[in-house]
Image (cartoon, rainbow, N blue to C red; front, top):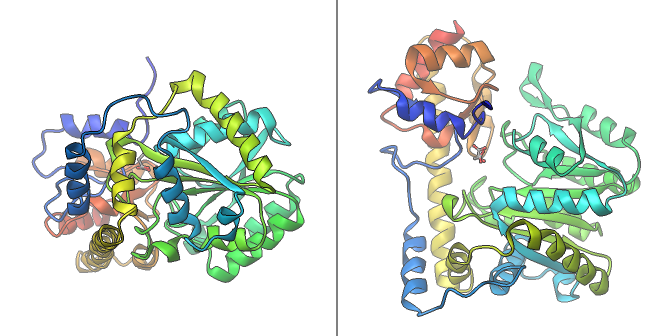
Length: 392
Ligand code: LMR
């Protein structure tokens, strides 16, 4: 018998818990202020447009819905991206971010300069087995400084400088998961410089565009900066969190190549990876996203509604911090409000997280990550009390 997944496995344990006060702050899935799953109104609208349009259910091509891919790339790189106009950017639809990571991992294992990939320490738990299952050795670069609850920027730069030339570096484009701690714009500029000097290959994972700051272009700043600095790179986008399309598995893997010809050759190889894996991706979710992004008015509705989710989470950060203080905690919780995105990297130890679960039925991941998306006006005081009791 294998162990349950450290993130998704928490859902089963939570479901089986009979405590009426139980709280799920494990998996990063947005909840409204009543703790219910939330479907963006613009997604509902797009769904009904898709189902009334009489589309058939034929196979998509191996690369998926081309219109979706084009719109997804424009969303990330910007509608003024010169490289897109030059034909140097191509992409394929993937099974959300995870599927895109897997396809890229397999591509790197076949064609990468090295058979390793650098990921931040810490990183999203699934990054590591995805890349290992592709046959890559996973190496870590310094990222988080637990002592200062901040970015270990000098450690990060040093590790990039020391890595063998031409290494692939996985970068979280915004709202780093799990720490909620991103480099500043000037730090990104320096990272771009080091990666260029060492001939490394940047691979962005972007799961929170629009969700991190409530401003989609701002959240793509790092990607756009690297493109304008002349990098060749790869990018995987998830549409799970920002569009709330978790179970639809909507994603895009794209790459900026040195020439149009090279971009096409990469596309041909991506298709060779995809075909024996899942043949071609499902169409419905991609059609929903395309329906929104092709229409200016609906895109604006999406931006407002996505900002609404980001703002509610921001409000809950403030509420959690003040509830901890009201509960009598004298620890420094300032990182709860300074981090961004869906998670608070609380600093709780594995033992403290286990106590929260066993004594209070509050389910977070064992690395101390708390999904702020599961915090509501109704449960914030209870969560704060549990956190305080377990960290006294
Ligand atoms: C998370 O980090 O909780 C989410 O990205 C969901 C997942 O698949 O792990």
